[in-house]
Length: 297
Image 1: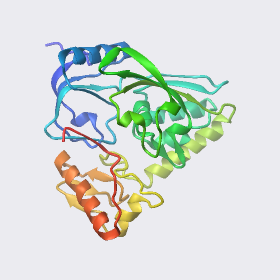
Image 2: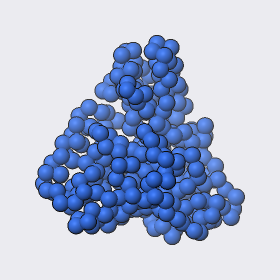
Image 3: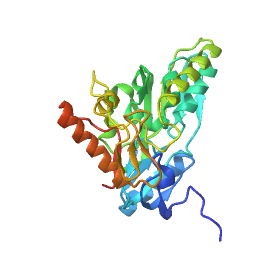
């Protein structure tokens, strides 16, 4: 039997291997488009069929229910590619381009602005939606525009300026509207020494990997920082490192990470998120808000 091409919709595909937590049920329909026209065609098919529709990227910052997802789920991680203008600083990247890959390319081209992104386990599209950031930098500082489509009218993609995205801390308008990122355009600072930028980027990556549990399945940071406080410090101050529900555990390395120590379920992780929120609220009077997007709950 010939296996279906990844870009063709397939029935009942487990999503465990498409999330960084390695949990989640099956998608009723699933596809991995490699080109924007394929993605647009799938979105049009879902709209015409009356199917719920969503797109995932690298699967970080995402918790999919054990019961799975109805409708069509697209994974854009094959939708990769970027174009960099080292002289002018312009960078255009497909939504599925890994943001650490783009950060390294920018550094090698002498473009300053994305060194902070090298340790973020996500895609360009996800970084735009979440206004991803780390080590003093964030997406909103460098983004110029984004190309999106509306799943209800997928045949007509359109551009939005960064100023139209209502960026805030780990927030954009794209979290509240059913718009799907196809590509993004950045303006970085040209003319920097590639060796210096590459060394800085590598140092940023080492800083993150040496202080965070990169060897175990996680989603990245679970909670937004309740500024000026830090979520990880609040959780650690209550002695919650190592707290577990099933095989879901608050990381002993970094308290704002929940790791899958073996056979955790999405329900285990969800229960542990809520337990940590309850403990912090009761003991410190602070309500922690997850960065994690829940699907299917």
